[in-house]
Image 1 (cartoon, rainbow, N blue to C red):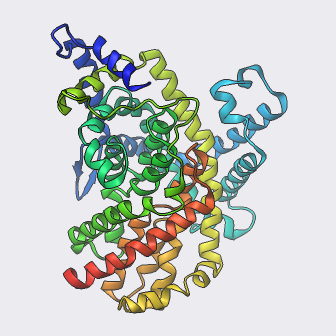
Image 2: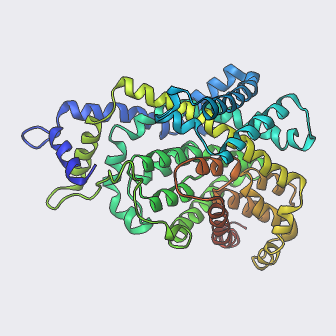
Image 3: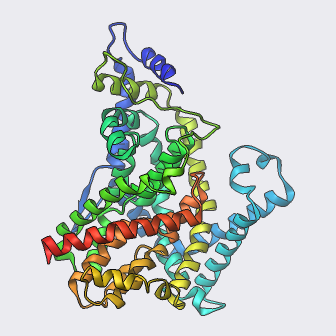
Length: 463
């Protein structure tokens, strides 16, 4: 949708006097407030901070409990069977449209689905090579990651339209477009991505970004930048990390350091290759659908509200919403889960059973020593193993005696953002134009930029 069509739509949503109609305002406010309540409002639960979506996911996880790994394996096998059926029999229901996109995949993606199902069966029934189904490799993905993905993304897929389809993105985007363009070279609506990640989950931020890109609200460069720089770890996960490494008494200092280092990386990294070389072109089937700059003579708040109401007026009805939500659930379960199982298991096997990350981390030892961090040799592998999974650096850092070094490693693990067991798999599956080698380069850039910042803040302010 062009700027002119947006304004035309906005005109239809306003009264003759130029104000926003009550009907249009309610259509914007009610669904958007539901989305905000589910995704963006922090809720204290004991000593944890979560969101409404997290509470619903926890309830479903508790209700299904031990059956979730079995459900995950059944979904993995179903994904392989349906993909094979579509590839071989080419049924009419999958010759075009959304089901064609989900199941008519290339040989590499089909191979990963088969591998994911095989790893899932091995981890569930504990057969085959032990390094595949071990509790620290395939067991982690099937027993820890898969239940969270199934429960969290089930509700996320159902509720996401209330956050993105009823005008909230337009309202916030137009309000903060100037500072976000100036500081990050991004649309203001990306603030929603960052907030949803911060309070909920980094993978939810990636999911929002992917959908916004496919709908024409982000360019290729913007989508790649947002997905790799704004999909921050949640407060709840940060609390888990600090508790695990024995730093929960320093959580405020810890999270403040993560925020400062993360913001610095978000300013610097998009201006470096490979992100700086991504074209500012839109996903072709959608085209450009964004207009965040207020026309001359119109106030920002009024223009933001008009854009929001115009978007709400064009929101899908209940039937289309239900169909879209169902497709989102099927896409995540049958297309994303196999990739997480396959790529996550391979990554964890490399980290757990091979010296690969130890070898790769040798150049990091002089850097850590230059930053005056004790036990540099022990900490070096923890600075790179996060590419496999975000929790692994904390596992390695737990045995380090120096509280300063544990602090730096734990902070670094949350600022690296790109990890293959979950976020990386989601990015590779999405239409956001990022390749595996680019994700690795971005991970290394984030490491090299945020590590000195974290170490400097730790030395100057906290230790």
